[in-house]
Image (cartoon, rainbow, N blue to C red):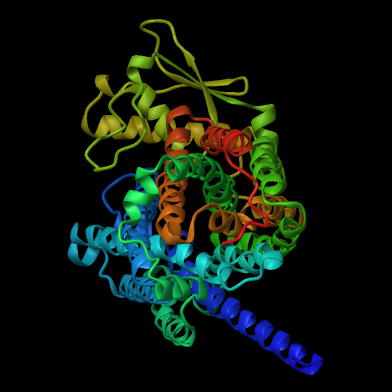
Length: 551
């Protein structure tokens, strides 16, 4: 072939590779937008679909419904992984996109609790589960498709475009949510405006489907099909042979750590700003969106570095750094977003002194329990609704429960000695006294806009995003290189979605439940820190370097 012919062939290959990356990445971006949109609107959804429970429980239930989408992701990985290994990569992720887009659009049309009662949250859960089912087949299919088109020396960089679509999808969701908030009053947004981003997804679905219909089948799968090398039993090969199963198990343990930090960095930070630090929803969305816009390009940098220096350095290093950095970063976040609250926590710490037997776990998933029957419950439920961090001290037997705010002590009323109107009046009076004491000690009702250090808040959240990008960027290339082509879709997708679905997906709800149980607003961070530490150790000890492997 002439020099001119070689140049034309090289140029054609680059154009083909760019089209593959663009098509797969844009499709994944829109699909992650659909999936994450619910998380961005969890607060509004809680008010519309979870009526009849206390505010804190309603929010945790909304987060649990968010987690329901993650719960079925492993099933989607098993179903679509098998189809992808037997039928092909392209048609599989076409099907996942169609399911995702239809489910998201229907959430925008779903009647709320006031219209159809308990059927509303049940239907919401069903649609979230369909979304989770489709995402279970998306990541593996898109990652494999791009990697099987990429040259070995660019596999980390090329697939990092796909990994960047997860936070980019959240950015897109936040952009539309913010645009809707700006375009209408808060009342209109709460009443019907929150539905608009869900309904807009039908347009994104059409664009995504058109893009992916232009793509051809993966050359690796096409070659296997031509040679008759396609597996007939991907489950038996992936899970029944120790040479493959040992890596399936190790990948699950490692990704449990990476996904925990990812959701702590991207989602929990948004909820923490709103629920704990009392930053209004619009401002919190803008801060997080700006931070993610800074972090997303670093995915390409880390993917490029992994092509030069190997995958494992960044996989293990990023996970370990995340485990070490999470607590300090969240404490810095409090000081930056609500310095008055941080000062009050230092200068006038809150303590609940009560007998443990008189204290209930402050979470009611079915809305049948009341937290106003014992003095400890009255005290703790007030602090939980106020979003105030507190420590617990065991009181002597027979002593009444009290709240200590710095040097000021307030005895909580014992509802057992009261009934009817008298009990309600005593509890209301106690809450008013407690609010006054908190205000006097410097605890703010909401974050002061003038004192929010926006550049520092953005830098902190961007730093968490950059840390997660460090291990997430080379992840797709690593997983594709780790498993044989015959069972790659099944073996890659299954541990990934078991970990992201069952460990990462329930992080926000579990973390807030831990906070409700302990009273410490930072205690929920132990969940991602513990898993990230375990994941780093598993990666170091049990996972190999894969850069340069033939796929």
